[in-house]
Image (cartoon, rainbow, N blue to C red):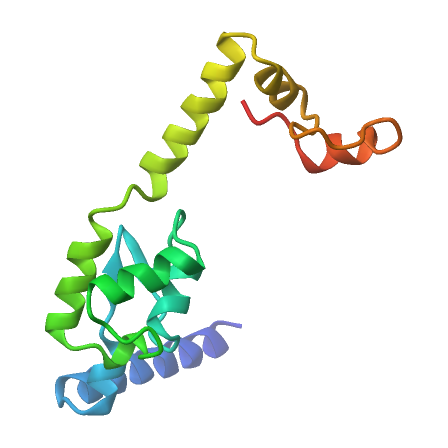
Length: 152
């Protein structure tokens, strides 16, 4: 009951204070705890920087992640926890040049809404949840409507 909760809370508090003591003393633990935030998202510390960009940020795929790393002069296979301050700043500057996350989502939604407003075939099919690019619908219409709910 209450005693088990109190014991668990004490263990959590002890672990947190021990972790804080390790981080304040510097060394590898402090380096591993450092967080990298790009475009409002946290990049995983234990992944290669290019792969971390792909996984974390909406709007960055494989080619654009490698292009960003190349333009920022950062090794794409380097772990996020191994980046220097200078490399981080160059990455932040380079990622800032791209339209990502919520602005990109808003832009895509506005483009779809425009197609629907002008009654374009693609817009009406997106609103109905149907395939847009000429795929077969005679027999696969139900599956398409399940996979593509209304996109407008």
